[in-house]
Length: 326
Ligand code: GDP
Picture 1 (cartoon, rainbow, N blue to C red):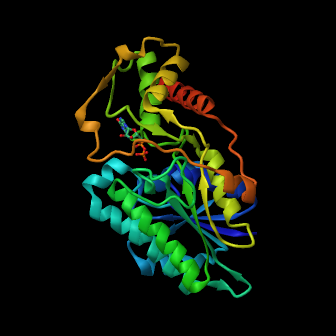
Picture 2: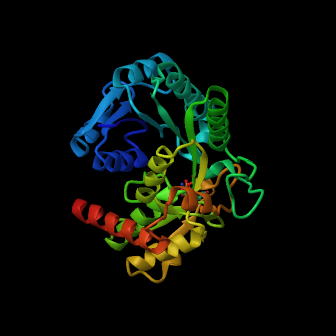
């Protein structure tokens, strides 16, 4: 039975990846930080097959211990301070966890190593936020970075140090540059889920407005369930490499809002939407659109869920949750 160790197990991608690896016959270990972590109880209920392992990306000895005790074949580093808006307020924490955390995890992988004929394979969750103020359209594995937030800056460090450990120590280390990926498990702080949840609540009469920040942005949004397959595929190749994972399409904030309201049968969406400065960011990423050609050709990866289907899935999920709550 292959063994996988995942950081960020309680997050959206951790959950999708655990489910996917379990279906592939993996033994799945999930790193959980802190004492009496409430997310651990929820995880035990929903994913009884995931074995929780204590550890913290801020604490190298804990990472060494976690890898020594679990002896994984594959390590997926999905743990991070992952919300761009929060990273402006907690920039040092973001640099420490989202940036330096990668270095600590790589160091643990290098030191524990794994069997000589089966060294540990490492996946780093890099991000399209590294492209920020984009230098070319669409963005590829060769597009220079220009991050626009402490989160983006920390992810650039994580990406570069992953490449550096691969080149310096011959680690099987891959960096997946994933564009925004969403789904019913997305946290309510991200714009897609905030919108679909508010639409459901407005439809059910539980809320009467949706307050947003800047809507003049474009994102390449895919479905998280499709994207975790690309992570796994990267670790099954003969050679480690970096890949852009994206849909190749971009959609505006306004399109997202309109489609979500339409999905709930509400045509006059402008009536419900208000903008507030407090949701605007000090610097913005205006346009992201990735070119997934390399992932498609080398990994044989394809997205299955398109943008309208994603919005439909998320609105339906929030209508179900909010109706049950009523
Ligand atoms: P990001 O691409 O990782 O920053 O993902 P988000 O879902 O947090 O934000 C996507 C875009 O939505 C950004 O350009 C935000 O400025 C914009 N946006 C506008 N209003 C909101 C809001 O109320 N919440 C969030 N999270 N983003 C918003």
